[in-house]
Amino acid sequence: MSRHRTARAWAHRCAGAALALLALFVLASQGHAQSYPSRTIRLVVGFPPGGGVDVVARLFAEKLSPALGQSVVVENRPGASGSIAARQVAGAEADGHTVLVNSNSMLVHQVMNPAAGLDIARDLTPVLSVAPQSVILAAAPDLPASSLPELMTLARAKRLLYGTPGVGSVPHLMVEYFFGSLAGIAMEHVPYQGAAPALTAAMASQIEVASVTTPPAIALVKAGRLKGLAVTSAARNAALPDVPTVAEAGHPGFVINVWTGFFMPASTPKPVADRFQAAALAIAGEPEVKDKLIALGFDTKATPGEPFGRELADEARRWSDVVAKAKLKL
Image (cartoon, rainbow, N blue to C red; front, side, top):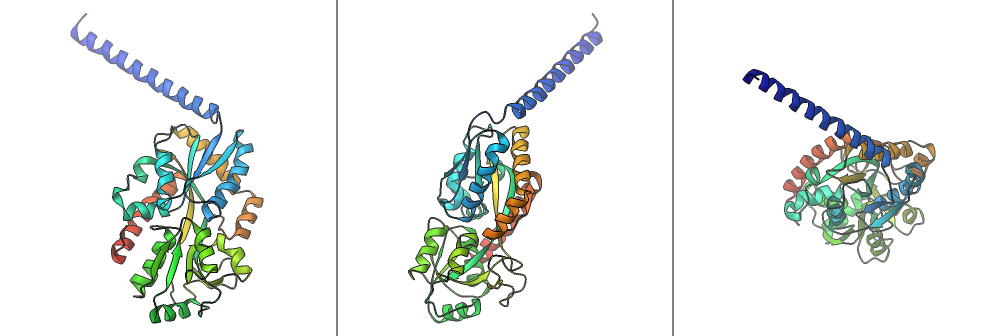
């Protein structure tokens, strides 16, 4: 056989092998999608029970179980603004049975602490985000301030304590950015392991104000156990129509929201992530779920994985600018 014929034969064999590998990959991908899930799915939440991310995770877990045909359980792994849970899921088997439920607090934590051992873009696959929520400033009942301007006046006269769900959380960064960077007001940060203990401390007047996501504070504000001073959404929260936005309080354009994101390990097969995403998006679109989210103080927007991933990249750049300007460090 001539050298040219040998080369052509070799090329044909290589092409055939490549096609065979591609066919095997397609069949394997289809197999992943058809066999998933094959056992209990764990939703690993980066915050303690009672906070906004936990509330959303439990609402979706209840609906995902019948939708996917397997039990879906919630496991809370709080700490380091959600980064402990994120690292756990990043190191889990990439088969779709371990899912991270977290907020942009872990993104802020990564920006503030690049040595934390987590690179979201490298280590995790964004599956979807749901239920954006604003941040609320909730004051102790006996605090002599009933509005954001009054709080700012008081904070200029004396050093106030404020509590958040943790160092590097969005509520923490919001206060440091708004009060420290924009208004030049120094307040002392008291970090807690979640929204619930921060709100409890505010009710007990151990701190003057809590900065947390809005949903866990709604019942307490409605009951008069806390005073809602302002929310950071573009419009007033439907569940707290009497609480003005930061923009209404004299700071137009100031809007910060916290999303609830679902993530899988980076190497999870796409058909597996797609199946989970499709089930969760369908649940997010159910009228019953939307009504419940609104009643709890959430927005009903849901974003699929690919656009959510692009939003993550944009947000990382934005928070990097905020952290640099506010000179924040962990």
